[in-house]
Image (tube, rainbow, N blue to C red):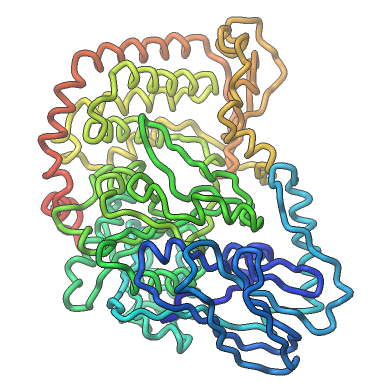
Length: 616
């Protein structure tokens, strides 16, 4: 069974050479993140018995098989076209990473490429210059024209696997078309025909059928592509619609898994090779293990945004955020190389694969519209375990490049729902502190509408599960959006530098700000009349004492001017006082209602009434 192909940079996916291989003098080391073969995870979760490297080479003098940094075998080559089948000592090896290295012909004059060791010191300008340099080096020796291959494994009892990939989308045709073309080109290759992948587009905007090229491709490949018109019930509703379709088609199509994917993420279809290869060999005790997707950044494609997070006390813990995956050393961090915390970690729905033994009509996501729907579903099903594989990933824009906007409402409301269901011991004081911080921070950023959204999220949570089940989610979202101030386009595009991102994710970035905190960021001091600038990833203390600021939403490419209004601080205080009173009086009753109605909230009957009554 093919487990993973040898991958190379591609212009439309990822150009970062050192994610795939490293130039080491006259050798090319295929020890980049996407081409490593991690041993311990395979040993723990699969019945794999052997590992063979199949290679087609042209213009290579020698090859080495490697375990970690040790040479297992070295073989001299003719320099012409050769086909090799090389066995790794998989049965007797328990841990580490396998990889290989080839020696090129006529490459002795190339300088050795340094491995990246410290992303924290590299600027965006240096990264861009390095990419240009590597591209120029490729002109002399296009490695992908000289080396092709894949890793193959055997196991006595291979399991049948068929995946339905579900993409939830709302009026994002350019992204959908890009990934659809990529998938279809991938499936047209003879070696991928056996996958029989289903690729379903849940169309919350009901616009895909009107797009000429998308509808033409769907008609041309009816066994693969399906457009599913859907009401706009958010990401939660769109993905649930796809889950229900997979459940209904499970027997007819022989489906075993459903994979949820974002519409606006860049993906390498190779991820399906790795999913099928891993799942086809999984052990019986890991029958329903989830495949979690690693999230890499679109602006800095070598930077890891998320891989194996956990959620407790309203806080996301992410030990790998801002990890530079070009570094061989970083790729061997324990959380990446070794199986651990499989019952604690979760994956976002940018890319996550579930067994259809888990996805059932009595075990569907909650009707949360957006935000925390994936976390709640993941935590609910964590007893199945989760694994993160190299190459099972997507690239997406960073979370911090957009202001929260209406998401502040969903963050508060849905976090409270999560706490009511899964964190019964969380104190109301802790909840109040978190919500109050949310509200006050929004005011200090002069984003007064987000303070309102945060308070409103708490209010609507207290209305209980009956209100949640009966509300029109699309209408509610439109009502919330009416509170958003007008904006105008930004003249110039901006993106955060690496240093700005590192500062944004530094847990200590707001420490040593005592004076700014006790003066409410200078609101109790005379105003600084010079216009400040605040971006989503800037700390509120960067606009200390400012009277007037320009809010630049770099992700949305929008901007607006905001002015310090003392009455908004008073309003925030009222929100906090009101939140305290309501939490202390009503939370216990509401929590009990959510626990009582939990089985109904996750049942297909509720979802069918909300979603399938209006089949496009």
